[in-house]
Image: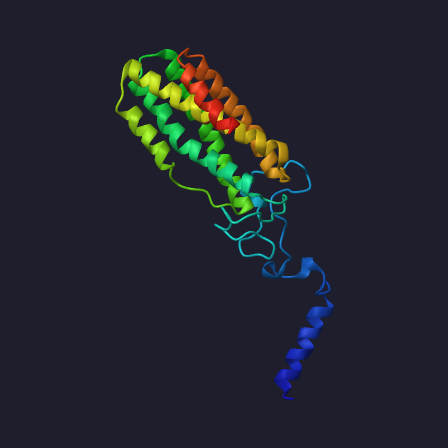
Length: 235
Ligand SMILES: [Fe+2]
């Protein structure tokens, strides 16, 4: 053994004996630290802060973009079922067409109650969209960046309409969509095993209730719209 090698070994031994034991996690470099739990599972409240997420690629952490239609996946906040994923996707898609719809109400309507409903859509979904993007990231659920084709078609209908015609289309399309998603939220809240999804469903429920109310306050919801919702939720 050369002198250089001996010196290196002695130096390494001295450094080691003067520090914490290598098995102490605090003495390990950041890259060797055990993975942190995702979210704030165990507190019962979850957590929307992305800083609470496991590092991407860490053992036990959901891979970015994973899931979204592949059965139940696991997270530190609990299992994420197909229904949970469908719910997050629905919340994301709601924001992607309701915010444009709310803005159109400000330009295409002359009805103050419709404009007010539009403001509620914009405000509610700005908040909810931030939350759904954070929670989906923490839970490893892939969410879309575009509204569905059907929703885009609804926005196109509203863009082309003005005044009373706009009001009728706006109120009834939105009232129908909110009635249907309200039923999905009940299903999620009743059965989810995931702390983060449970909290998310509470916030979404409050937002959807608010939107149902402001849409109904316009006095423009038709019997046909309510019958359409009833058929959809009872099938
Ligand atoms: Fe909404």
